[in-house]
Image (cartoon, rainbow, N blue to C red):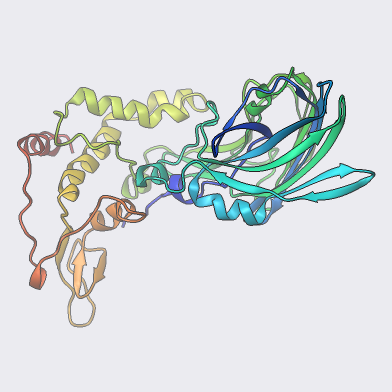
Length: 392
């Protein structure tokens, strides 16, 4: 039985980004290039807790204006599903008069819903700061005043990978620092790991760090970056990856995120197209494993992808991948992996369940008494089925 690896849509985290300012056009907030406020320093400490990791951040923000200045500060909400989480979990305090004052925040969304594809192929556009919403609050500075702002929130879990490569990655977005006046004066960012994360010194899959020249291990479980006059060019990332390859077990449980949008009914599949999909599947791992990727059996990977595309055409027309009926004592026919309401289904039924949930497109059809109505395939789909059958 193949095990689904829904890493893209199930372990995405609420937010992992620095503070920024937004401009409201009507009721729609959007990131702004800030010309009057600089980030003189930032301190970020990330440690295990909550639903994975907790972030505690302190920012010193200085006004360069000659008059009283008010700005709408913000942190991004990277997905509409997290609006409620951020409303309850995100906390802001500001140092004033020698004391910390709790500041009320609001969640302002430009979109309240996301499409099935956005949820399944979850990947926030951090580079363009194109977010569906923000946690916002107002800050007022006197002329030339420096404010110290404390932010805390639950980052959620690290992103995990399973398949040709196993591992995880933890990301904290710092490129929003480019929106402030001038470079960031100084920054210290540290990440502490729990006991379940192997030591970087003994693990067979050592941790890969962004900004390696600025990174220092202060203990076997804590890494720290320090910067001065910093203009971030990439985000802070810690990654632990181990090469698995196309082992028998990986082939058996191989889960493929099908190309979006569907083109099986409108474009002819070719060997060239399959090879393009193979290279796209391997692209994320080339930098970390150049030799392994080069030596991988691409024909074997192409066959696996062709098999998925073949069954996708059938699934698009609601094929339930029915094997037969379960026996009176619950026994299932050969080739079945699951039963429901007395019927037995193949592994492809379970594979495509990932495309059924969260408003997905897979809608298995099963007629009265277990009959399956014939699918009304388009001519292009029939051609593609014949081609893919020879590639599996």
